[in-house]
Image 1 (cartoon, rainbow, N blue to C red):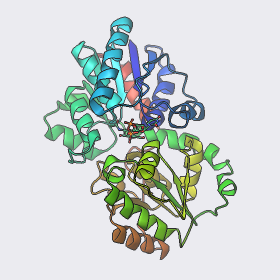
Image 2: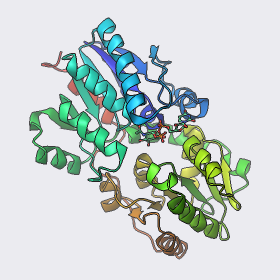
Image 3: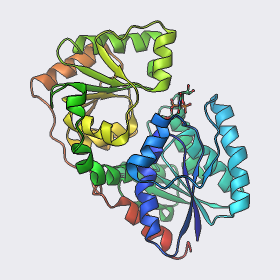
Length: 360
Ligand code: UD1
């Protein structure tokens, strides 16, 4: 069977890497890798292919940035041509970005089977563009691969046929476990002149946090306060840098650097005293790294990172961020154990399902 694997934006790359690798060992499957081009900067895309050893995409749709409707539409127009030409038996999408939803819709309307990796996650917050992407993708996918039991329950509650759901674990953690040692060998700490366990690491890019000057300003205030206790390292997403400039915010005290590669970032996350983030994937990665994680959101679609991991929701509220930070300084934090099946073998389980009848 011919499978089209789709990637588009930064968090997709670490998810597709182990799947592509496992598929190369399955003689029954041939694969075509399509990059939609949703992310296109070298630091948001190319570096991940190099770091993770992903083969260069067979096809790049080059859609770039635009409004949600325009970006989604451009992906759909270009991806439809690819599907008609390649005639795949299955399209595999990962995560919850616009490219994920766009390609699922195209495939589904061409009667091509769709597999969604990381299905069933729900924040129950429809103001998040990703929640819409997740709901649409899961409602039309033929195979739904989940990372946690709560995701299975969400899908069952929405009426998804249980035969379509496969609880396989977390492909992002496959990648983390594979590259952990290599990342540890980098000398990021000396490069940034920081000490292990004595710095805060920040990522921020959600529209709800960075597109609103009041919210963004409050978060920056909290980060500036933390920077009086320890260095605050902030690899800054292009959207966030743009907004900070538009709002005329100064980032004094905060060490804002360009986005980092996968291995560089993993090295820093492993060594951080605390991670402050609004990313989904980082909540999962800190769970495995056992590094305290403060999530600057009101909700998470990944509750297992709270029940099993180091994660707590503090929202974009300065008092809550600072009080949680002080708890971490006092050594009062939660123990963490790996969630079920976050064991480095999720991609193999996915490929086992794809390579076995009756899908073939
Ligand atoms: C997208 C995903 C989000 C994911 C995030 C990870 C959607 C709806 N959102 O958000 O779920 O967590 O990626 O980064 O799919 N830009 C560049 N260079 C790039 C890419 C983006 O400069 O390579 C800038 C552009 O100004 C663009 C803005 O960042 O308009 C936002 O990019 P976009 O892909 O729309 O969404 P993200 O915020 O990156």
